Structures are given as structure tokens and as C-alpha cells.
Image 1 (cartoon, rainbow, N blue to C red):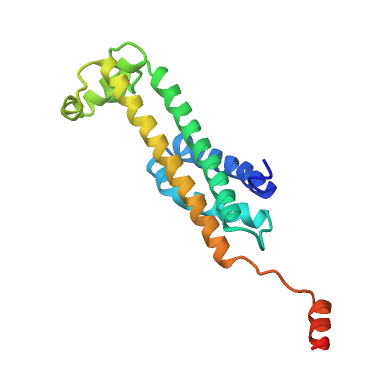
Image 2 (spheres, helix red, strand yellow):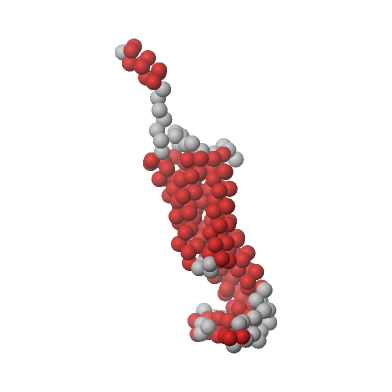
Length: 192
């Protein structure tokens, strides 16, 4: 693998996995504000793409290697976000048994899983939107729901991967330049 990408990019990918776990856990389980995950997809890719090359100490070398380092770290980070997000959504989707606070009307009468989630959407006033999308019962709702979730996850992977390439590009244009040792430079000027 080190012929395609640098070892520093592999290390950066592990850092990206940690960053993804932190982001997804923070904004789905602790403070459920899922749109922040979308908002952070591109910047986290930029950061990890830059870091992949900094960690690799890329002061010289082909641009293709720099961009591959960033793409690799960005895609690994994005895939981790997507997998964790889908996993958490699957838990809440399939484990939904219709429980609702008694102050909000008590339990929803439904079959656990797609039916309960579908009933929640209907009670939230989204029935007309669902009908326009061709969703009229729990089975079609389940297919529609997961199609949307996988589409969202794919978009997050693409955004984070693009951010990784962008971060690598930023590193490439601002990377430290190779320093010529003074002894070589002085010897060259003395002979002239």
C-alpha cells in the first residue's frame, strides 16, 4: 500500500476514523443535530487531506501522490461517518416500538420497525409529502427511507473525499520546500 500512498496517509486515515466517530456520536446520540454532520463533511475532509500529507512529511514528490494521500484519508473518514450513521439509523429504525411520552399522546399503535417510523412521519404531518413520493404503506416507506439514507451516506462520502483532495491541494501549494544544506550550497558557490 505504501507504493500507492504514504504511511502518513494511513495514519491520517486512522485519525479520520476517530474524528468520524466523534462527529457522528456527538451529533446523532449526544446532541441530535444531524445537519451538522453534513456541514462538517467538507471541512473534515479538508483537514484530514492536509494532515495526511503533513504526517507523510511530503516536502517533494509528485502531485499525484499528494492528491492520492488526501483522497485516501478523506474517503476512509467519509466511509466511517457513513457506516456509523447508517448503523445508528438502523438501530433506531428497527427498534422503534412506538413508544412516545404519555404527555404527547402515549404509545403509537404500530408494528415495530418500519410501521412505527412510518406512523411517526404521518403523525408529524408529512403524509402528503410521502404520497407525492409514492409512499403509501410501511413497506414502500421502508424502501423509500433506506434509499434516502444510502443516498445521504453516499453524498457524505463524496463530500469528505472531495474535501480530502482539496486539503491535499492546499498542502501541495503551501508545503514546506526542500532546504538545500548549507555545506553543499557554499561548496557550489566557492567553485564558481
